[in-house]
Image 1 (cartoon, one colour):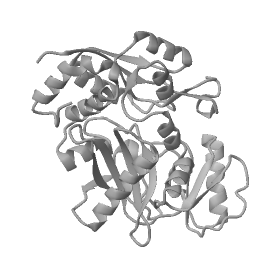
Image 2 (image 1 turned 45 degrees about the vertical axis):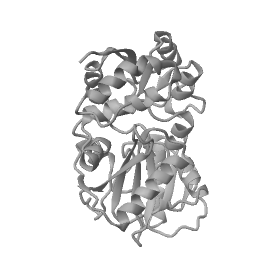
Image 3 (image 1 turned 180 degrees about the vertical axis):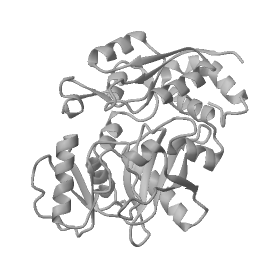
Image 4 (image 1 turned 30 degrees about the vertical axis):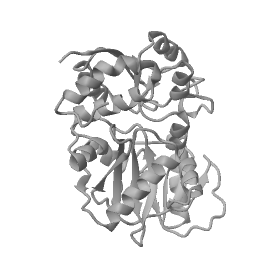
Amino acid sequence: MSKSNMRIEIVRSSIVELSSMGIASCEGIRKVLTKHFKHVGVSTVNTRADLDVLVAKRPDLVFLGMKYVPSNPALGIHDPNKIWIGDYLDKHDIAYTGSGAQAHALELDKSLSKKRVLECGLQTAQYFIVKQHQPHGQNNLQFPLFVKPIDRGGGLGIDEQSVVYDEPQLQAKLDSLSTQLRADALVESYLPGREFSVAIIKDLLTGQFDTMPLELIAPLDSKGHRLLSDTVKAADTETFLPVEPSVLKESIQRLALRVFISIGAQDYGRIDIRLDSNSTPQFLEANLIPSLLNHYGNFPKACLINRGIRFEAMVLQIVALGIRRSTAVLLQSLDFAVEFNETETLPHAL
């Protein structure tokens, strides 16, 4: 099998708070791509200067493993003037995988994505926002409530104290998020039902989206809750189950796809959903650069269990989708299209 001459650069950050791609995930993706492309590099981007170095390389495609860098490195993730990588690459006519800056901005701030979802008439738990070290004031939501950071992923800030039943517990959790994470809080009605993660990826032939749900079952904590905390996610101790065909499955898939479209997501991503007390699906949050690590992460598992798409084919499908959006590299991609079509492990032609 001949390799494509296209140049692909995988982009991640060595700053944990900025990167959506770990070292192991990056290496797994790199190994797949080097089987099919002659020129595959890895760029570590922590600053605006690093972005300039990336642009100077003029890759045909960037495999995104992060969303932004701060304008002021001293402010880090708290910088209000973030440089969104998608915007930066768009300005330099460089193609990249997945969604653009506007969708990433909605994803990053969970309150903005929930606001957008509600504006589109879709289901998500009612909520309010509490700024760091500020009183939460009056609200009309009844306990129990669920409290989490407004802009952190990977279950960070979620623990046994996240479900609160009274004002003292609420204030204690708010104080904890302010002190330990310097994070504003999203406070929402607690959803006591089952939890699902829905992987979404565009079909290369039809242009339609595959919606692939998994049920996630976290171990019970000491308070009897099943929460996907950072501890549970890091240890990979949740159980995952296929979702059998049913009216519930269809409603989960329908909500996930509508949310995905409503926030302007492209090509692939993950939408998390939880049932309320009436077993009605409610949007939790989006992850548009989900973990892509073989045998780990809900996105690869969902692709394999629902559609039989193995890790290599999944990575190449994501790459092919990014290539298709770029007219600048379309002609260069023809050789890759032939290989993509002829390789038995890959799902569809470019």
